Length: 188
Image (tube, rainbow, N blue to C red; front, side, top):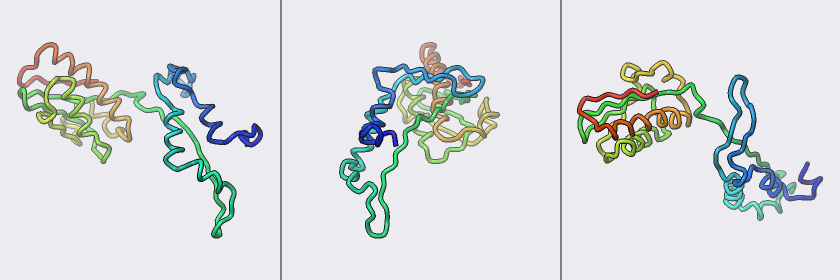
């Protein structure tokens, strides 16, 4: 409705109204009671939307807007949002170094197809400065995870910023100190 009132293309209006890259960091304000103001630290939202519009050939689809063809009305709807994640409570992981070529990462969460195993292996490999082939990621056992009490809540993409981010500084500290066999790390 706003686009029609302004005689603008709806996609163009959306692109114009998105937070622009040069506005980053962008303070949204308080979005949840008891939480500090939300700040978008980075992102190029117009580029992401433009790519989506290009992928669906938006310019060609606009000609169908409101048309009745083959027993159906055609229309284009679009919505943009930013999903917050990784705000805590923070999760952790347990890392045990058995030797230079055998490092185990224990997660209490169950993996369900979001790439957690290779992601955590890569975070550990990068943090310790070792090849990824020496990292084993074990999951689903709250007996092996020091912070098991949040494990049942781990879902969607929040596991990466919470578990991965909690491990990286500790792994870097071990790298600086020089790991020894049998050294264990629990990060929160």
